[in-house]
Amino acid sequence: MDSPAVYAMFEEIKEKLSRQPAQEKSTPTPVPALNPGDIEKIERMTQVLNQVGGKLDRPLRHSHTIDLMSNKVLIMLVVVKL
Image 1 (cartoon, rainbow, N blue to C red):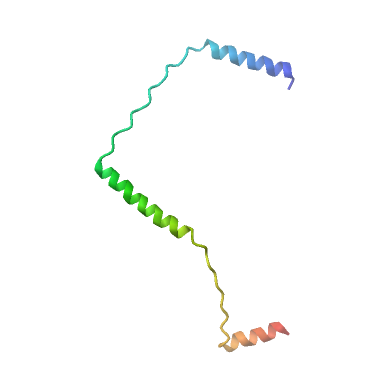
Image 2: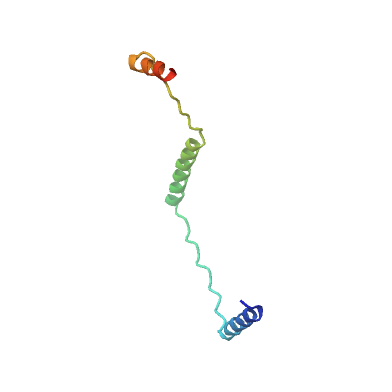
């Protein structure tokens, strides 16, 4: 696009916005007071989240074992080595 065309578009938008009436500032909605039961629920949920968070911090461990007691595994290892 041509830069004068872009400038003209921005000026047009600016004019349209200046014609609109100013919107009234909305008052923020008041936060309801907490009941003692709500505080207990929040504390229980915080404890549960802390427990879950502790479990997520642990590193994952994977282990693989080869059972050489089976004849099939021993024969397969010998054949693969050949």
